Every structure is written in structure tokens, then in C-alpha cells.
Amino acid sequence: MEKVELFLIPDITFSDPPKFREYLVENYNPAQVDHDLTIIVGITKYGKIDFSNALQSFGFTIVRNLGSVCHVKFDFDGGILECYVTHDTDTGVVIFYTNYRKTKKKEIPKIREFLGSDANTYYLFFKPLLMKEIAEELMDRYENLEITAFTARRLPNSRFESQIRPKYERTISYWGGDGREALQELEYQYGVLPSKFVVDIPETIKFKVDDEGIFTFAGGDLNILFEILEKAVNESRKTMKAYNGSSFKVLPVKTARRSFKIPSSTPVSIKLQEIIEFHDMKEFKTKLSKEYTIVDFIAKEGSLFLSSDVISKSGFQFRIKADESHIRMFPDGEMIFSEFMKFYKFILQLIDPRAELIV
Image (tube, rainbow, N blue to C red; front, side, top):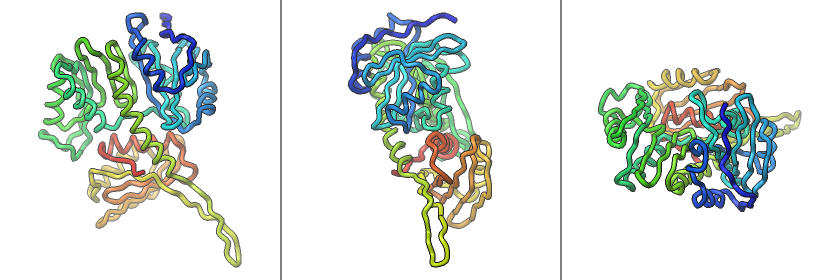
């Protein structure tokens, strides 16, 4: 495999992640490096030391510490991956920067694998409506903006307006010089929301963004990309607050004759914008069963009440309770951060793209 040299950062100290981004805006030159700059965003519940330990336990080696920036590498069969990592302990956001070449089958190897395999980390996905908002803000701001490729999706029976066959699930991949117009037309006609798109603003910037927290920067004003990144950082504040609000405790109870313990669980609550009705239950159960094992699924008509024990593929068990407009996730033990993120992603992608965490 061809050897890739990581873009050079001198031995200086950065006080916080935003300072590193400011440095890149002023100094990063894509003409001097191999391949495009790839930025991968994750979120973690680790503190600074524990996150560093987790990276090293996974197999990353620390090359240099540059204050709030860590230069790391990973030796594997395909070669050596090098990248810079920042960790914002206030929001939990971790960001990997590298110009290591992507392959056709996977994004940057090992980074996504780390984010997906550690119980206390996950990649920071963008909500479908946030992707739509980003695209619309860019088009309003830059009249000469071109979208040269995009992927857009629609949930089955989504309430998001669609003029043509609204009950169908669909994914549309598009390449062309009129992607800006096509995206707007397809959103209106087929009710799809963008999950990734490539933006070219002539003489300004060219980049790609997708809803799994991956940015690819080809050249131009990097500050524009970091403005979009800031939206993800702001979204993560709510995510971490909702997670931190959940809990599981075993409470001691004592009576005159005996002592025993009662489990007590504080849920994560997700507010739905697309109301669930009783006739939706069969489809909801079908979707849930594709991702989880379902035990004791109960749904009652009238003022809708749904209850079920749920077991993830990794064996994590929790209970869900729902009414027409809320789904609550009750852990049966300590809430595992990655499992919380996966369930929230499941709701956004397969149940309601407008869903919001309650904090």
C-alpha cells in the first residue's frame, strides 16, 4: 500500500480544540499533502485520561502530545494510519483529523472501528432534519453553490410531506451538475431528506459531509466546514445531557420483618413529532425486531400504551415504554453509552427523523 505522510503540525501547544481548528484554518494547505483531509467526529463519556487510555488499549500509539491535541498512529496490516485527535471534555466531542486515503469498502480504517466498538464512545451522527437545515443554509448563503452528488432517504409512511407515493420507503443516490435543483425537487416530490452531499462553491470551498459525522475537505476556506462542525458540537451538548440524566439504582427497602432491594431506573425520554398510533404497532415491532430481540411486547389501543423488554445484539437489556408522542428507554443496569446512542439513532432513522431528546 502506498505510504501516506500525515500533514505536518509543528511542536506547539494548543490550549483547546477550537485553537487547533483556528490553526488549521490559517495554515492547512491541501496542495502540500496527499489526499483530501478527512475529519471524523465522535462522542464519548470518557474524561481526558480515560479517553487516552481507551485509544491506547485499542491499539493506537501516542506519538506526540500537543496540549489539547494528540498525534497518534495505528500499525496494521494495510500500513500505518496517523491522525490528530482532539477531545472537548465539556461536550464529549472527539475529532480525528487525517489525510490517510479512504478505501472503497470502508472509511478511514480503525478510527470508525474504535468509535463503534468501545462501549463509552460512538460516532456523532447528524439528525436527518439537521442535514436538511445545513444544505438549505448553504444554498441561501451562496448563490453559486453547486451540489454535485447526494444521497437522500425517506422512511416508510413518514409524515414528512411527499407528493408522490408517500407510503414508500426510498433511497435516492444522485450525481450531476444540477444537484442543487435536483435535491430540492426530490425533497418536494418524494419527501426525501439528505444523508450526504458534496458541495462545490467555486473559488470558495469544495467538501463532502455525511450524517455519520464524516467530513471530507478537498480545498478552499476550511472555516466554512468548521461552522457546520460547530452545529454537531452544539447538538452533542443535548445528547450528553440526556444521557447523564438517565440512571439505574438498586434501592434498599426495610420493613419490620425483612430487608430487600428494589431496582429503580430513570429513563432517557425521546419526544416524537410523528405521533404513533395503534395501527402502527405491527410495523414498529417489525423494525425493532430487526435490530433487537423483543421480549413481552405489549401494545394497548385507546390512549396508546406500549411496553417491551429489549435486548441488543451485544446483550444489553433495557425496557421501552411509549405513548403516542414519547418513547422512554429504561436501562436494566448501568446505561451503556454506545447502546443509548444506537437506540436513539434507530428512532431517528427508522421511526421519526424529527424526534428530539428531552433534557
